[in-house]
Image 1 (cartoon, helix red, strand yellow):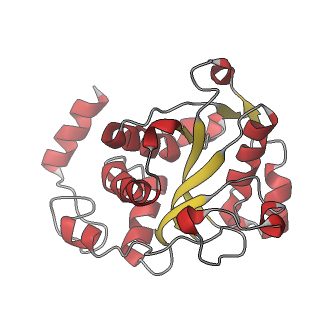
Image 2 (cartoon, rainbow, N blue to C red; image 1 turned 90 degrees about the vertical axis):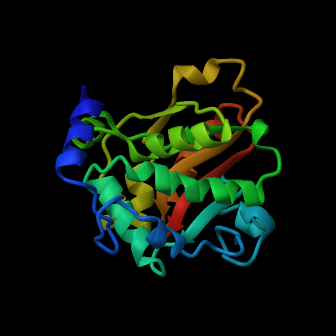
Length: 234
């Protein structure tokens, strides 16, 4: 029923591109093409060039629980992407998940040779925020990536307490805000997922605090290879 209503609304009020304001799509092909993807990945800690976004030596590894971070594009250097993410996340324009996930698929194909080893795990929202927003943007991205690549999705973690919006906090406050915010879901006991490499999916990462806290939970519970996959780094 919701899909039928959305289709009718799109007929009555055609989608308008978030960037150029032309009718047809929420992110038209031309504006999507103008989004400049990163031509190289970097270590998420020291931000020096790194093959496939892998975390550099001992010092960097001591600062994060992630094995690597794959980033599609710069948040601040791509105004069209920034507008699309904000519209997708805060205005409920779910249709943007297809165009945005396609960017993530391109990053995966360029950096990971064997996608069959991986499991997509979207960063969860706390239940009240999920109900208020009506969807989890990370979960929608993961589902679309799965449709396009065949990588399965696993909802292995849950957010067990409310946290303040990360965008409004400083780095130290973000770490405190997210402490013990995640727990392992019962789905993680499924033996078919225990040997998978994990790709934590989110829209934007600034300080790594959300991804890192989620990775800690998975590592403590026996998963050995946990990476992040995001549209942009703030």
